[in-house]
Amino acid sequence: MSNTRFVIRVPGRTDIGCNTADEVIDALNDLKDAKGATVDDTETGMRDLTREAIEELANDERE
Image (cartoon, one colour):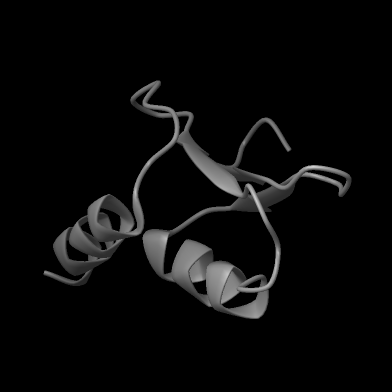
């Protein structure tokens, strides 16, 4: 999983690796009932990204 850019951490579950912000958004939509999910960006080292920040990254990726 070290080659994935984003890591979604959900308490009590296996971490989910995603390569694009769009993948993160899709995964979060599937996990909407999960409590305490956090997203880290391994490329920048940012932790606990908000959904808004992820959507911004997704928009940047699409450009």
